[in-house]
Image 1 (cartoon, rainbow, N blue to C red):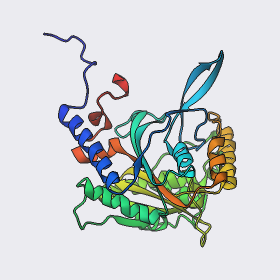
Image 2 (image 1 turned 30 degrees about the vertical axis):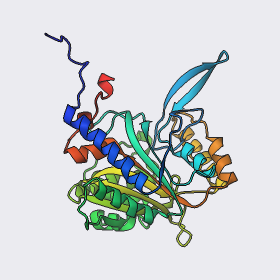
Image 3 (image 1 turned 180 degrees about the vertical axis):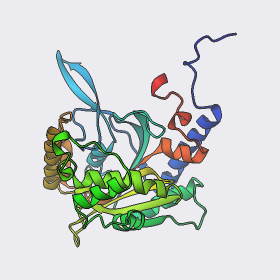
Image 4 (image 1 turned 30 degrees about the horizontal axis):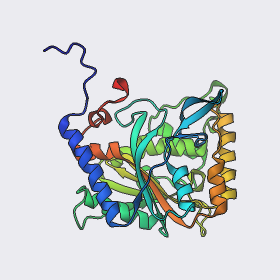
Length: 335
């Protein structure tokens, strides 16, 4: 019988959906065997993440006649840290997260995330556990290791520049020499250093010059990011230029972002304020700070490491899919 318009149908085939279910089951088995508890936290929150590299999706709810703005989580991080401070011990969560970015082959505004936290671990120990998870999912051979480079080694090897010593002019010259076209405001056309921050240019070099090389490298950990890109990571005690942060790339695609977690409530509040100030300068949406997180850190969060891993992208690797749409039952345009 004809079904007329076919947009009601799932995009992912039955085999992909079965592989997604098997992946979830394998992940749960992995953490169960290691004594890591599965948890669930709210998707909607009264506060959001002011990180200037992330844009939140919002919703509204009427409570006792008053309309309140709510934020759809960009990750479950803040709520999970509140659980850690409450004494949960090691925890993980498989959940939906939401970010307002364009739909591409690698991004859907609603996506599935695996996030876990390990009290007593540092970021290098957590990188080892991620490697074990990849083996468990049969993405690595039993004795196969994952290549690991510092942020400085990465830039020196693939871009020929030291990111901790280069000036904005140095970075802009490299970007221009590689033929990467960037917008310069007319009033800054003859002063390119006035139009871009150091971190904006470093990110441009990473995405346009370095990541294409990583496409041939399989799995690669990049660690020891600049302190200016710390996000929610600790700053290294011996070297204040370095944040104890890492990312995992798979065939040139960012798969995971992890930290040796910041536990200082005063520093966290300062970073929230700095992000808000930058948002105001860039005319980005104002984000209400999560005071619950600040209070939890003030109460006490033991040293721990945490990571967020994109499961839709991981499933793309498992299935050999080229677009995130292929591994979703109903991507954005069919939701």
